[in-house]
Image 1 (tube, rainbow, N blue to C red):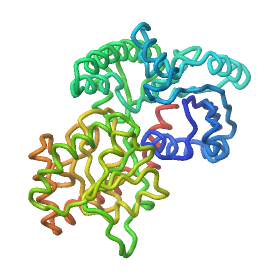
Image 2 (image 1 turned 180 degrees about the horizontal axis):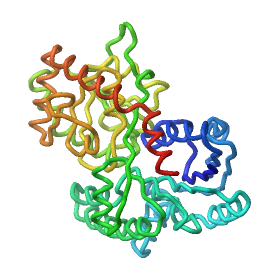
Image 3 (image 1 turned 90 degrees about the horizontal axis):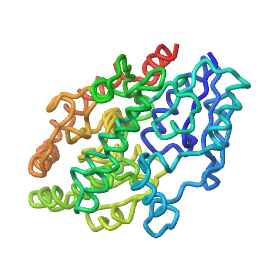
Length: 394
């Protein structure tokens, strides 16, 4: 099969959950099919195009400048204003490109692709004929914006997020109804899109994990922190989640265990995250390898109240042999059994209690981590996930 994969970015450096999911899927598809890849060129990340041959036979770059998300950026402010006036949500406007649209038209006419995969919703405006495309939907994007509105700190933010949620819902539904097929990353997301957007037959592929890569080293000698959070720290749901944890949950943990330490591990920490750093809270920024931070912790925490899709960080933590405490939102779409292979809590008091119970009981931590790693190893290898995806493409 000849496949064109359309995305906003290249896959290296690989430091976000969506990138990991795509990379692990596409590099296996590359072994079975002729895969071409098109994405925007980011001169600050030359590693992307340089390593594209690891997962595709041919790649195409399109120049496109995306303003940094800072209110001091006139270009970003312009996009925010456009987001108030335009029927399209800002998150989509940022990636709209006539140059990419023309390039896709050109190469499709040349190579006559059997399948065109639109990876995430954001490149969709650049796909000339959506009826030929398969939408790989890592999240229900409108749900993320609704949750932003629900947890917004002030009236202006709430009003803005509500506007964006309505526009995202309208646009997401329009694209889902136009494409040839929608592939979600969980059964819950698939049913939600069917229900909300009036479509049928939404498929889903499970989230996978490289179990061998995350398997704990024979002997971990360095203890880093008691609690660890993994994630891209420029992503709004992660920022909001860790602000909530440090503000409302960590003081309850410290009241019982004052020496408890937390590591926030992930790329591009936003100013709000850097402001959380202190004696008991360590903000790492980008690290060359997240595994030592997992292996050197007692618990992995996922205190997310906003988000969609599925969190790879949970399966990665479980594959690394680390027990996980998460909100229901953080763990949605995954195979979880509260108290068996994960601890679920949604209020500050409950979240703190679940953490304290496990911090105080090493045997309970080991049992939970062991149950989780067994399920992950048996059911969620990337090879099985790619086989599911391949079947849907065909």
